[in-house]
Length: 273
Image 1 (cartoon, rainbow, N blue to C red):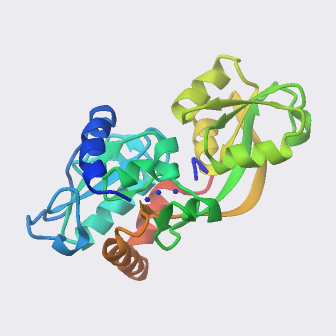
Image 2 (image 1 turned 180 degrees about the vertical axis):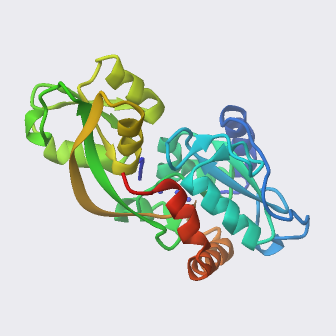
């Protein structure tokens, strides 16, 4: 996002905060990987033998419920992290958390998870609080509206309610470019999409792949403009705390690209429109 947009430090605080956050973060599941109890000892994992990933669900096609990896979730981000976990000899567990807490770094610093995988754009602002992996996905922003709205582009939004996800690069782009529009913030796509269908907003400005999913699902809606914002997604880590894990994830990501497995996962979710 550009859902999305990225994460920072603590120990005594982390133990207490992790208990509080885990109670509201959603279900945790374990999946792919050997899950050897001694695996990943050098990574300072939340749970031995398990790569615990925080993500905001749903955000199709990046994060969705379902799948067969044992975590209870699927999507491009989840399947890619499952493959990374397998490379590291770990099981995968997924925590459903708010994107805002994730991109600000507070969720990671609290020790809720080992890394964030939530279609998060790498930005200089986020780097102040989060360490990022190498980029793993290039994204655009886009404008989704109903076919009969009369809206042809961002210049037609003045005086209209436009939905954005709070804390995302989509919101930043709309703030800078949707002149005269009233931006209505929502926690995530799970609230944005129903709001558009209910007529509470006239358009959604967010990551292009997510809007493509809505366009596919309902022919009454279409993308009228795409915006090349030169965004790249990265996996997020608590600032200064997970260097060994981040380096291992980068190495696994490189190996998945070299083997062609990354491309297979990519093609599953990003075939031609």
